[in-house]
Image (cartoon, rainbow, N blue to C red; front, side, top):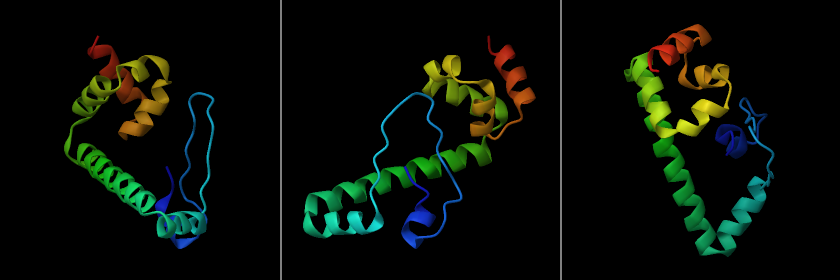
Length: 112
């Protein structure tokens, strides 16, 4: 995960990630990435596949946010991530879905 605009243009990041559980963070500089890609064809292929999959996922998320009603957004999220619906704060789910917390509360209570 990265703020790719920042990463590739070497500018300060505008986005950040927030971990929900303890984990390990590995960092790869742009120079290190380019060096790996130039020295190892398989790494270049790996980076290309990961970027392509990330781009497709981002497009899908944008389509969901633009074209689906709040109820549909929540239903899709709950279907894809049933464990997260139970484990993370509703405020975070609302932010992810582009909803107000109150709207999510109504949707959550009506779907039970």
